[in-house]
Length: 269
Image 1 (cartoon, one colour):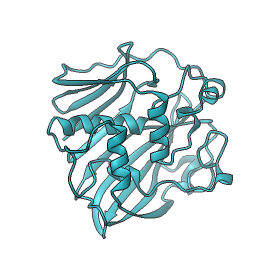
Image 2: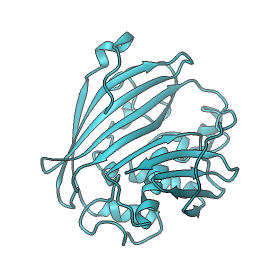
Image 3: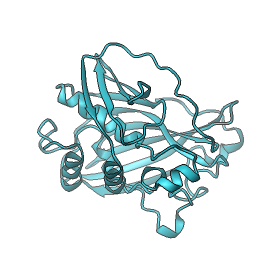
């Protein structure tokens, strides 16, 4: 895991931590399988699939504490960074032990780094320690990026290798809405087209980064690969309504949109 950055102007926020608890039940996992349009037969029978912990210890800010974008207002746990747009930029995970159905889940989250780049983007790194009945099950670093509102430019070319397996799907607004509901994610770019276009200047709704990451892991599981490590990085916005391709070549995975642009890359071990 990466070490904390130099404190800079956000020094008082480095090291802040919160804890959340949840009981692992089967229903959210069954709903995820329904969302992915399969029966979950290639997932563990009595435990969460990799990344399944994202369905638990969800954000529970009261409605009155949400900002205009649908995220919890800043300045409570996360710092009051000025850039108005917030995205999940990527992450790195180690899967250390199974998370069984029926276990008690604890997530401890700490802010480990806040780094403002020369281009004005600010990255916040969170460290999540996930335990199931007291056993460390997942260690995760999550990268959030804060950036100004601007029309997205053309996607930067991303080199990927030859695909050994691919699968095509068409994410649509219904899929985005169901995933938002499943993860209690109120960010309006995923379900409010007027907001996505008018306030954040996207051409359409935006497919969740975590949804793309979970689809990539699911694709690897369909190939019989059970990861012990997983890392992913968002590369460009993916919009619904046109075909997207999930691809794997060796330990590398990626999502490609209908124009050929790579919207997410990932690797597993």
